[in-house]
Image 1: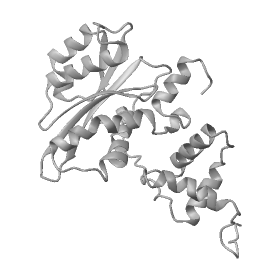
Image 2 (image 1 turned 90 degrees about the vertical axis):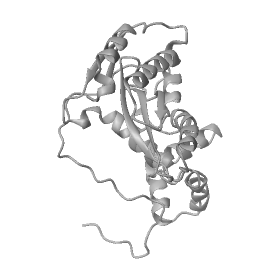
Image 3 (image 1 turned 120 degrees about the horizontal axis):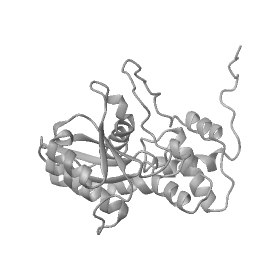
Length: 260
């Protein structure tokens, strides 16, 4: 049986240096837990030619200094149908929407496109009103141009377009438009939102890491911050499924045929 240590946590003389490196991340990213703090601290150490830390050491120092976050509560009462992740980029893009309530009562509605392999947030649309089919069609255009260039008229390969069963996604005009661009529209099973769990996880990340603590004065202020949030997510935020890399770092290593 495990016995409690009579002197509490084991401490090392170099722990203060480790703590300072942890705090340099925590001050800017207070919503990050052990896993992502470990990834960012070691990313900075590798760039400086230093040996990375073991994750257990990061966890121990964070626990001693009460910097860890509460554990997750996982819900397992909803069905999960199929596998969302793909083995390569540009095979399936998922899309969903979410709302941000402003302090003045306005509601900003956002829809986004996410690659189901490299997790990059490709593009988004936002408006202080209900999103319509024309907004989703604009999102399709922007996503296509972002990945393949503004002169592109259709995808070079067929890409699945995964969404829920909302009207803006399933309208005849949107489905026909998507097919004309080279997409294959597919939807999640009814009453199974976890079947688009990758999009749900992305929404949770944006709300936790960026919306929380930001200026939500009004719709214009929120919409002006959205591009910077997504840019930071793509370039900086470490992802467990990408072995601690950000989406753009992961794509760059794949393009150079480097192991990830």
